[in-house]
Length: 163
Figure 1 (cartoon, rainbow, N blue to C red):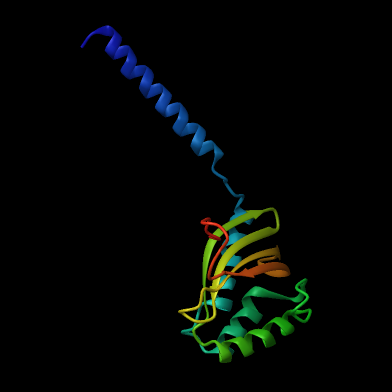
Figure 2: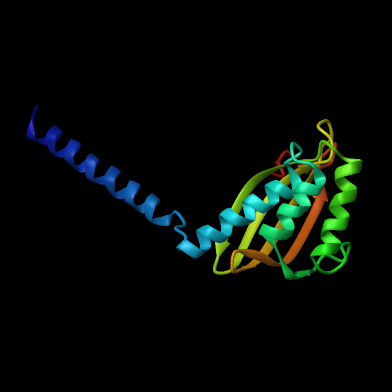
């Protein structure tokens, strides 16, 4: 192998290592608190929206004791303020939609805020809805919630996915 080929291989290796390190440096690294908040919000949303293997009363008990603060503030105009309003809403949903499911498509955490982008389906065959939740966390509990959503259309105006 001649010197130019050796130089080209070494140079290519340095370039590859350089770009890999840049890509890794751009990945979001969370503080321990941010990671803990993100993990807790995901756990709570799984209990709220997906754990159909648990009885509704058990789900509400877990949410009350482990997830939602007694001083919970709800910003959605369609849900009564406080955690009990949220629990009443979901008690009804669990009865009406026993196969309610949710999948998390994206998540992020910064400081005391957590964002979750979800695909929620009331029945297995429904198109469902795209939801975005923002939670403010304090002491491992959800203390505040903002949310927006839109139904997944049967015939979208573009080929881009909502997820």
